Each structure stands twice: as structure tokens, then as C-alpha cells.
Length: 321
Length: 262
Image (cartoon, rainbow over all chains, first blue to last red; front, top):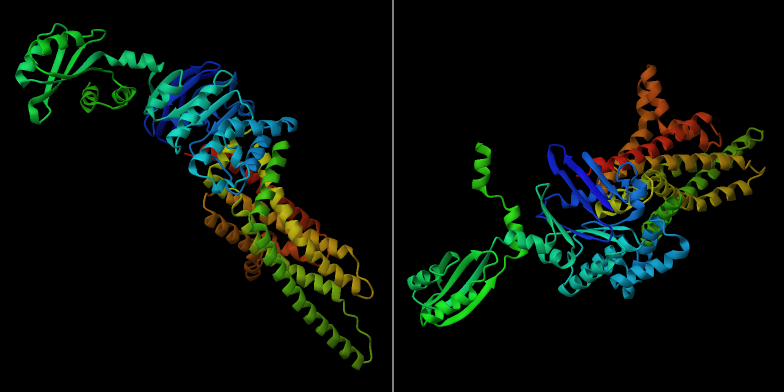
């Protein structure tokens, strides 16, 4: 449905997007993840035909976003970072205007407006002036605007910004329910959002793609090893020695929890190795009270940080080459 | 076409839902009413004096009140329009850019021409609505004079007002498309319109071909004949060119927003 080849966009000297390529299948939800200024918004703006690319091509439903801009614009719904609202219109007036400029035929207009208001749960606010709505409702009107013409492709730039937790969950459900009939690209810097809504994730940093995969695979691939957290009452040195003797334990660190002689130890092992039963046996065997034993997963958040944080030392060695 | 109509409709609602249209029309009508009244009093007084003088000398003088009124009144209307049209156009693009709604329009299946013409026609319609009541003042004078004055003078005069207004609106929307700031766009529009208006005065102090070409560029030079009810082809071409030029530049400017926007 969407094909992007070597897409670049620079503003003068500054390169915002640097030769990225990816494709999105019909009915898929793709998440764009990256820190602020990574090039997410720029990529989306190129896809919608709002900005011309400096290099490469992007196609939506087989139409080039630049050469066949009108065909592309007919097929997309777009929610920019700031919802493009006319404050002195009511919700219905606004959606009616958008439906008109998106070429929704007269006979379908009323029905499409109702459907969009229903899906985004703003039907009760239909006669309110947009300027009087709260931030969350404004965001939902923006979302309704993106789906009012039932487009093939929906592009959402940070769709859950400004919503309260309950609304965020509703919007995520809405996005998930739209998939299948619609192809969706959404950007966010909120990580759990990606793992909850998206089929695939593109992590983008400094205009380059650093990783593309399903949220589950990304977690697996980057986890690298197992981490086990042990909380026990034991002498520091004794605990360290005991844990290091367990076969498979690669790194052990022990910290005092302060008063009472309680210790926290982190044991790292190779992936797929579960040392929890051995650790329990060891600690209890020594007669030390064991308070907690738990496997820790690297969260997507940590993976994201690993991928997007540049190691200054690493960079220096690259430069000196 | 459908896009153009949608934009036109949206702009008209914007003018009439917000108080903009009412305030501008109200100010315009109060000013034009006051001017019309005071001019009428002056012109009639002057005509009476002329008649008295003529009678003393034993001859009949005729004074053409309707066409004198048309000339001075439309001359003033021109100046009032010059001050008020920047208010109509200062926000047309500036506000859309600031609110981010330009992004919605430019990613929707409407052509740039549809956006520009829709907005231009809406502001022009508002101008026509504002002007309609003033036509009745003039018609009243024409209907009550003996012998009745030729109606085509009114048509010619108002054609001039409409052309002048359309030119100011076209230029104004172009200048509005250049900036996100409404105040900057208002000042630019007003400055440029005033400059075109006053070019006549600068031209008179000079001589030679430069002064002549400056004079050709002066709005007043071309507006004058219309207020006398004369439909001057030079004027038609002059205003027509400016209107076309303004709309053309606005389209180019809207198109270039894609390249300018960072």
C-alpha cells in the first residue's frame, strides 16, 4: 500500500530524513518511533504530499506522492501534530467542511459525518464550538477529520497527545479497529503505545532508520540476556561469591539496601537460561532469608534508549578511523 | 470546482459567524452615510448660490447635482475602501498558516487555484454586500433630479469601485499569504495600497518619462474617470491586470509554501 524508496528530505544544509526505505502492507498498522526531531513528522508530511522530497520516491496505492499528488490526497486521511481546526465552527460544521473538500459525495456526507463522530465519541459535542472544547476533545475532532472520508491510508502524527489515560485507551482501540480496512501509519514517542497498537515498528533517529520489526521481535532481539533480581538478607561478599559460583551466571552485582543487612543482587545470564531455581536453592541452602526473586525483561523503553542514544566513546573511535 | 465552492462557503461563514463582516460593514456604512450627507448639503448650497448669481445676471444656470455628487462621493468611497479592505484580507492566509489549517487544505484534494479563487471570491462578495446600500443613496439623488440624470453614470461609477476593491483584495490576499502574522500582513497591505494610491502625487512633482510611467501606475489616475461615469478602457486594462497579477502571485505563493515551510 505504501512504498518508500531512499526517501530524503533536507532543509537547506540540515538533513531531516536521510535515505529511508520501508513499505507498509494493506491493513497493517505501522508505528514510527523516535525522539523529537528524528524526522517522523517530516516523513509523514512527505507522504501526505504536503512537503516535496529532496530525493527518492514514495508511493501510496501505486501513485507517486509528488507526481500524482491529487490521487494520493484523495486516498489519505491525515492528522498533523496540531489538529487543523477552525475554532469558530461547530464540530458538525467543521466535519461537513472537511467532507466537502475531501470530495465525499453529497448523498454519503451526512452518514460519513455521523460515523466519524460515532467512532471518535464526539457525537454529544456536535453543536459545540470547537474553541470551547477541551484539549482531548479537540484531538478527537482532529481524528474524526482524518477518517471522515473513509480513506485507504490514515496517517496520524502523535494521535494520543493531550488525552487523558482513559481517552488514550479509547483512541488505541479505535486505531486498532480501523486496521484491516485501512492502512495506518502513526508516530509517537510513547513506547508502550507502539507495543500495544502496532503490527510493526520503525525506530528512527537522526533521519535514519535504526530498526524495523514487530514489537515482540525487537524486544527479543535486543534483550541479549536474562536478568534476575534477587533480594535476600546475607553478607555482601558471601552472597556475591555464592551467586558467582552458579554455572551460567555471567555477571553478578550486589548492592546493600541499607539497614538490616538486606542485599539486592542482579544476576545476568545468557539468553534462554533461567537460573532462578538454582539461585533459590543456593540462597536458601546457605540459610539466608530470601525475600524476592524475579526475572527482569528489558522494556521497549530501554531498547529504544539503547538504539537512539549515541555512545560518545563509540562515536569518537568512529571519527578517528 | 467543488473544492472552490467548499472554500468559498467556509470563508463566507467565517466572515458572518465572527463579527468581522458586521463590524467592517457597519463602520463602512456609517462613514459613507456621514460623507454622503455632508457632501449633499454642500453641493446643494453651492448649486443654490450659482442659481442666485445667474438670476442676478439675468440668465439661467443649470447645475448638475447628480454627477457632481457621484464624483465626490465615489472618490471618498474609494479612500474608505482603501482603509477597510486590509481588514478583510489580512487574515485570509495568515490565520490559516498560524492555526495549521493550511496543512489540512494542502493535503486535501483541492487545487491551489481552488483555494485562492474561493477565498478571493468570498472577500469580493462581502465587498459587494457592503456596497449595495450605498447604491441606493446615489439612486435616490438621480431619481429626484430634473431632468433625470442618465443611469449609466451610476453603472460606470460602481464598476470603478468594484474594480478598485477587487484589485485591493487580490493584492491583499497575496500579501497575507506571505506571513503568519496578521499585523504584519495588515501593515504590508495598507502600505502597498496607500503607495499605489499616492503615486499620482509623486509623479506630479517630477517630469519626463519616469514621472509619466509612475503616473500610469497610480491608482487615482485610473479610478478618476470611473467616478465621472466614464468607462475607460485604459482603466479596465489597468485594474484587470492588477487583479489577475494579484491572484496569480497568490497562487504561486500558496504553491511555494510547500517549499518554504520548514
